[in-house]
Image (cartoon, rainbow, N blue to C red; front, side, top):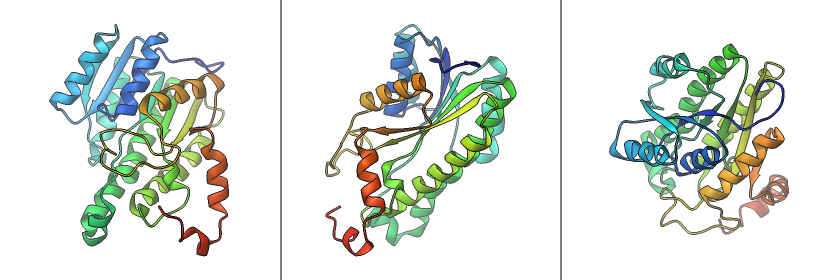
Amino acid sequence: MKDAPALPQSLLVLGGTSEIGLATARRLIARGARTVWLAGRPSPALEQAAEGLRALGADTRTVAFDALDPASHETVLGKVFAEDAVDLVLLAFGVLGDQAHDEREPLRAVRVAQTNYTGAVSAGLVAASALQSQGHGFLVVLSATAGERARRADFIYGSSKAGLDTFAQGLGDALYGTGVRVMIVRPGFVRTRMTAGRAREPFATTPQEVATAIELGLRRGSETVWVPGALRLVAAVLRHLPRTLFRRLPW
């Protein structure tokens, strides 16, 4: 892991019940990963997820983690890194919120921001410090194309992801040359439990397709991964679209 991009033997998933996180863990286990930590709020779902990975042959452990409790992050993640080296930390937690309700109830909007941005900043810095101390590893951050430009339909969620994306870019620059790599993953609309019931958007993808893209990004040593890849060009166009036209888009 120190000299060239290679697939991890051990990984820590922050957001242990995330469908994208679990799909990535399954794919990496199939490629040789043998130790997986699932970090999340204690629940039957977290234990069930761990059992599923154990059935694939991985030594899978769970650890209590709450994105909304930054004061605990250093202690919680410190326990994981004290056990053994971690080759990859996947920052996979986040919430969509409900734009219509959140606009009317600011405290709900704040919770989205605290989870997706504040919690991620805290966990990301703690994980980066631990990876740097061991001298190697990947920090993979699940961003979103929604963070590229604020849309009327989801600007609260999108703004939180925009902040996370900018943070991850800066963190990657700060860690350049240390042996620790930051990879930002920008999926489009992902069909998961979290998006169930929402209108399907163009360039929709699945957790399995995101996991495949993450593996390819790790092999290539990529800094940014778009899923699907065509979204890179779409986002470039939308980023420069005049605001008067952007407002007229149907989403």
